Length: 221
Image (cartoon, rainbow, N blue to C red):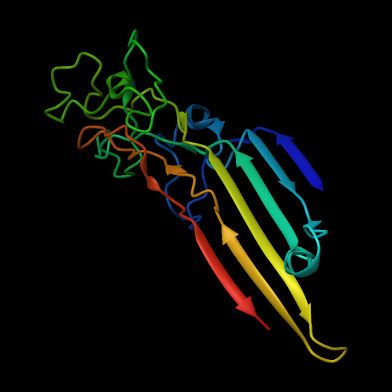
């Protein structure tokens, strides 16, 4: 049996987006405002694995059928990755498309953390050029930048249980057959994606469809 646990935090001032030439900052002249958790920061990671061989049950035919099976489960638990809320429009008039909204103060229950409402959308106000937020006193005026932090939220975590079951059937010294079944997310646990991230159109704070479903494969050789 092997187990490991990691508790860590990764902080950066930008998230790599596949091209170094791409814009990375909301405000190129204020990079200190970009300091936050990196988008692949996972605060807690736990993994455990086990390989066990069945001794068989009972005697006779039942024992021959149930013995020599090798079971190998792998369980992984880890917290979600950060994500950034954006205005979805060029409020700052910089053409960078990285504008963030303003944070609204004194909003009750800002983080319900349910799949239907991962965060309370009322805590953000988008650009004043958006009719939804035009009358909100916290809306972001054209030509300015919002005060919401980069990677302000962590998305839903992951619970993953994979397992394999295998056995070698020996017919003679020369001939044998290996059977192996592999299952990924065998418990079919719903691991949800992070919610949509733009305030234009208005925020939809519900977690999106699960990113993994149970899969299985069987093979003989």
